[in-house]
Amino acid sequence: MTASAFSLSEMYAGANFELLSGNPVQGGMKASPVHYVCPECSSWVYTKVSSTIGDFINVRATMFDAPDQSPPFLETCTAEKLDWVEIGAPHAYEKFPPHEKFSGLIQEFMARST
Image (cartoon, rainbow, N blue to C red; front, top):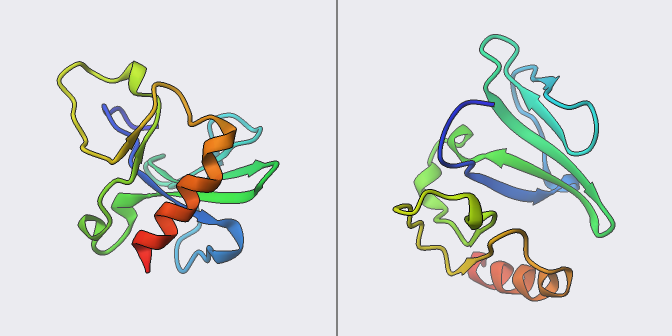
């Protein structure tokens, strides 16, 4: 993956994802989650994640025509961030949110998106 202080992506239910152009190839580890990269430059395009609550796609936010239209809602792995980095997302976790928080986070996110 490309070097950066951030890995900014948008998560969608797998059934709501459709690749409209290009032919990304599998890169990185060959197990779940599966990363797909550009075959020309090896930049990360999206990741398929399978979990007990369903299949999801994490799309790199910079792949969209207007990435600034979707401000961050949730930060994860903040224990690894640089001290001076502040994203301003309403939710932040040192690792990942506890499983019992997912339902409420998804409901809050959906309410903001409509």
